[in-house]
Length: 166
Length: 452
Image (cartoon, rainbow over all chains, first blue to last red; front, side):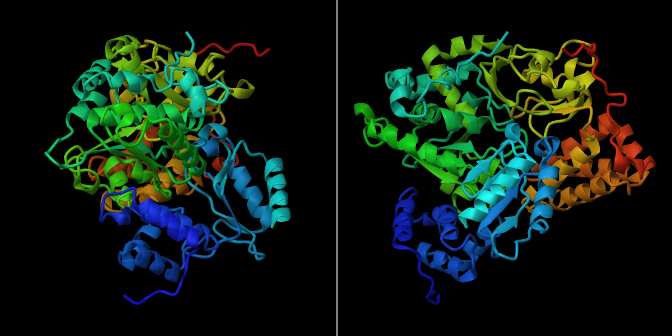
C-alpha cells in the first residue's frame, strides 16, 4: 500500500486510538464509521479520496473497505458541501406539517436546487429522509443540532444568523 | 384514563438527566436488586412480565434472551438498537434525551443477566447530541461504580459504549445493525444463523430496542408478575407512543394500552384532537410501515367494536381491515391530506433506504416511487394502480429482511382503502393539481361537535 500524504490532527489520532479499545482485539474496523464522522468534520464536511485512504491506512484496512462504507451512509459527503448543510426532512410526517413549503422557501431564497450549494460556498440544501423528529415538524438538521417546529420566519432568521456567523 | 408512567415517571424532574437527581429518584435500585438475584432468576422475571419487543416486531423479549447461545469461552454481547428511523417514531430519542440513566440502568441489569461484559448502544448518526448525553451518563455511572471492573464487589465486569451510525434506516434491522457495528455497509444478513448464535464478530448477541431495555428496570423493581398485570391480555406493561401529524399535541405519551384510539386522538390528555376543527381522514398508528386505515376502520373494528391502543386490537381484522401497533409511531392525517402524495413520500423514503441487496426491493421500491409520482402529478393511467398492487405483492416476502415488506405494506394499504382517491387522480388529471380529494367518503363516524 502506498503511504498517504494526508495528516489528521493529533487530537484525532488520540481519539481513534481510544475508539479502537471499544472492540475486541483485531476488530478495529468497527471504529470505521465513528472515525469517518471525526475526519469528515475536520475536512470541510466531506470525504475526499486521500482522506479516506489515510483512514484505511490508520485502521489497517483496505481503501475499498472505506469507500464502500462512505458511499453507503447518507451522512457522509463524497463531494464538497457548503459551510452550512441544511438537511430538511421531507418524509410523510414532516410533509403533513408543511416541509414542502420550507424546502421551496429555501430554494427561492438561496436560489439553489436540492443538492446544490450557493456560489459563496455558504449553504447546501440537502433534503433528508426521516430524521426522527416527526412530532416537532417541520424540521432540519444543521450540523450536530436539530432546528425544529420551523416556520418561514424562523428559517429567514436562521439564514441571517448563519450569514453573520460566517 | 390518563397516562401510566413506568418509564417516564420522573422525566420531568429537574436535573434528572444527571446522576444525582436520577439516583435520588430510585435510580439504579434495580441493579442493586438484580445483584441479589441469579441471571436465571432475572430471565424468569422478564419472561413472566410478558414484555414484547418495543422496536416494532413485538417479539417476546424474555424468549429472545432465552435463545442466547452460551458456548464455553466465547464472549456474549448486548447491543441496544437506538437506530430509531421509522417515520413517525421518536420515542426512544425522548427517553434517551431526557432520562438517559434509565437506559444505562436497564442495560446493566440486562448485561448481568445475559453475561455481556461489553455492551453497545448503536444510535442513529443524526442523534449526535443524544450520543453525547449518553456518553456523559455512562461516565457518571462509571464514576459511581455502576460500570467497570468488579461492579459493587459482585465480580461482574461491564462496559457500555455508544456507537453512532451514519444515516441508514436499514441499520435498524438487527443484522444490518451488527454489520454496521463491525464497520461495514448495512446489508442485512441471511438468517439463520440468528444473532443469538452468531451476532457481532460472530459472537452470540442479543439486540433489543431502547424502550425494551428500559422496561427491564420497572420489571425488576415491581416483579414480572406485577408488570404483567398492567395493560391488557398479551399487551402487558406500558408502551411509549410518539404522536405526530395533524394533531394539537404532538409528543411522546406512555400508555397502559387500555385506551381507545378515539380517546387517544381526541382526549386532552393525549393528542388533544385535530387542529382548526378539521376532521380525521386516516391514520398510520405504528410507524410508516404499518397499514394506513381510514377513520372509520381506525376508530372501530370491522365488527363495529371500539378499537384500542394495543397490539391485539390494532391488529384486529388482519391487513384486510386492521393494522399493527408496530413501533408506536402514530401519524394522523386530517381531511386536507392527499393519501396519494403522502404514500409517495413514504415510497420515496423506502427507495432511498433500500440497501440494494435484493432485486425485488432495490428495483421495486424505485418503480413504486415513480408510479406514485406520476399518479400524483395527474399523469397516471388506470392500469398503474393495478401495476402498483402487483409490484408491492412481488416485493412482500421475497427479500432477505423486512424492509421489503415495510415498503410494500403502505402502498398496499393505501390502494386497499383509498382506491377511489387513486382513481380520482387518474380521472381528473388537471383538477388533482389544484385541489385534494379531501375527505370524500372517509369521514370519521363521530358526531361533529360545535367548536368553541
